[in-house]
Length: 546
Image (cartoon, rainbow, N blue to C red; front, side, top):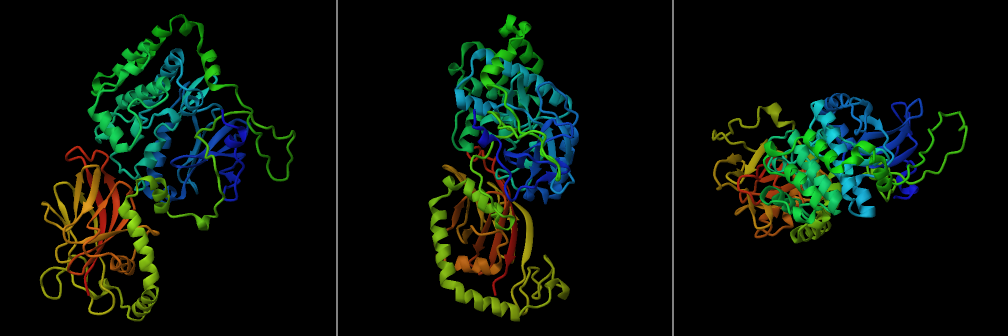
């Protein structure tokens, strides 16, 4: 199992010592929503405190969803769930506390020791099925059941993060858009195609999780998310690699039609029947001790200031936190935290195209060559700024001075920006950039189209050229002019979306001289090779040519 020093990491300079009265004893790791810490209740019970990361905490919609999911999760009471005991969706920052489970995740146990024996897989399926019964009974569909969300305690499995991950995955920070909530290798077909989510969706994920435990790898393989999802939707799983006793049940769990999948009660009964006398003799604990290893010693509670520990802090043995630990932790001051886009770019660096590399070098060259020019323009803009255009009677969509109905630039000063939010591009329409007729149209004759072929989707144009912005968010007109000025007119007429996430920005130059900024809000391109399944929603800002 992991070394204790990797499991219980010391607090860093940017970690709070206390969250809502809970004194933090160690850092456990990080997950999709934020950091996780070890603390204790007033009576000394160890708990895992999950603190929401700042980007999510600043989103009012997330807080509302988080609050709803907390209320639902409080109703879950099951022998095989990690109970939610405290939370505050309105806190600064928002947080929640669950009972700490000393034991590895299923993902780590399999990574450490390889595939589990058939009896262990049967006990696993029965326990997780009971956990899902409790979760579904509270009106929650987990949506993201996977090996890292199943912890192996000495007395059986514990399912974590039920319902809570939904609040985070539905924010604007989800790279694949709200249509693809979950982890690709463990999604059900209806999730992959943005269909109806029901309790049967979790049954499919349970089948995949059990197959992972038996095989030591995902049943549908690894690779790019789009490739894995295609296999899940369009191909039958290869069950021949599984131990023969598991095949009949997993075949029922993994059927494409949700209505034909096994029920949770059927799963429990089937596992008990296969276990035979072991089920009635209580053979489960021996299995879990072998799989999970010895139970660890947890650090003592942190005393309040001015008090002393009554006994020394014990060195913890091997254990596993609520969420797998970050193995390398470098303290970073808050003011030095990188932007969301930088983190997204870093996590998807392997998918960045040659065009991205070319434009990065081009951008740096453009910056160096244009520093003096930029300073001159900034000075000029500052000295010639005018009152807000709205105050002078101009508004988006109002008739122009020439009576044509199209927006026109201000008489003096920089051109006025015109906003066109939530423009949806799919494979049947297109987007006009030109300020005289901006927005989407129902044919493919506009300036920008969404094209999905060969290996993925891209924004393409026959007339305009575009540049993806790799700096901090908040691109300005001057930024676009600078970067577009360094791009040749006959290049960068298409841009792959594989590495693009919500918040990614593109500068676009129309032949008329109009400049637009496109900011991705939602992207649903995982099923790029299935006609009609791909779309992208952008916020568009257009500056007319001067």
